[in-house]
Length: 66
Image 1 (tube, one colour):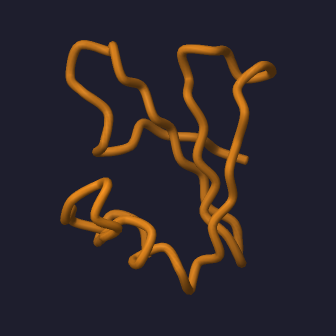
Image 2 (cartoon, helix red, strand yellow):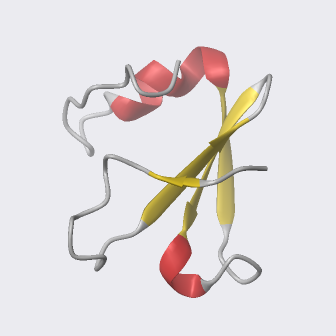
């Protein structure tokens, strides 16, 4: 999988969220923990927008991953 820094990450690297896409899911990990040690969650692509707009996250632009 090709991982890239999410727009949810800050600019100084303190909060490093990375995402990767696959045909059926969007995968999320914390890059500060290292690629092998970071726990990952997978969200079905059809639910990604709902996941991003959950009240605990606030409204974000989900157009980068569709």
